[in-house]
Length: 234
Image (cartoon, rainbow, N blue to C red; front, side):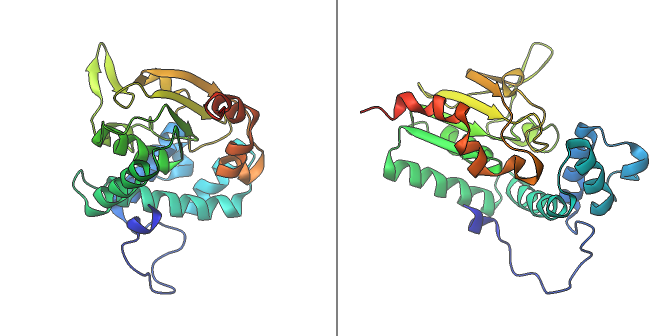
């Protein structure tokens, strides 16, 4: 779906490489910074936070490599802003339908969704209740990130008791979530605190340094292997 979120070429040298040009991406970055506990003096008001200052703080907080982290943050929040800008944003609808079409074509027993992909897949499965894989496995997911993702989901979380609650995809699909406690994208951890119907909510160390969030490391983890093993049996 990634190619569906590209809005056009960016001229070489355009914009400030230390800041996000998109106001929505800036707003989302500020909300993420607050969730991570970035001090106000570091964030300088959050909305105008230089990526250098923020990535330096996050790198120290999570013991990560700062340079790659800064590039990653810029790319992540640019894509998240494009996808979640509006409920009927063409990029959002096209990406969601692309994922749904692939699931419908291949009819997999397992749908594995990583990072922003977990948001796209979550909405695709809800939009197409006829698609009912046996297992929905989310890895390094930001689905519960407040003000950035959670309140913008389709379907929208509903008021249950004192707070909002999302729900698992329709049908008999089993939902398992895996997050590395050192993964600053998978915040807040433990999706089960925000969504009903999650069968297992694992917190397990995947990998140190920048590769904390790489899909490859999540896929190679023993927890992932144990989760999908029953569905690979003949």
